[in-house]
Image (tube, rainbow, N blue to C red):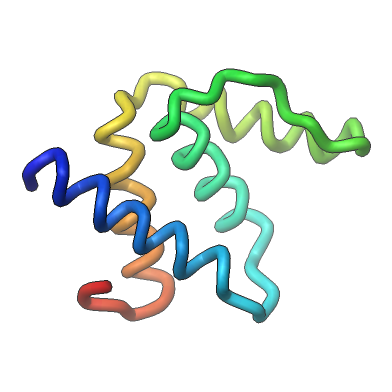
Length: 89
C-alpha cells in the first residue's frame, strides 16, 4: 500500500473508532492506543490520573515498541477491520 493511501486509511480507521459509541474491550483499546501512539510517533508518557491505567498503557507500548510507524498504522487498520467486520472504509 502506498504511504499516502496508508495514511488515509489509517485516518479513516481512527475516525471510525473515535465515533464509535459502544463500549470497547480494554485489551482492544490498549492495542489501539499503542498502535496509534507509535503511528503518530508520540512518545509522551501516558497521561491518565490513574497509575494503574498508566501502567497498562505503558505495558501496551512496550509490547509494540519494535514497530515502525507504518507498521503500527497497518496493524491499527487490520485490527479495526477484523474486530468490526469491515472490508473497507
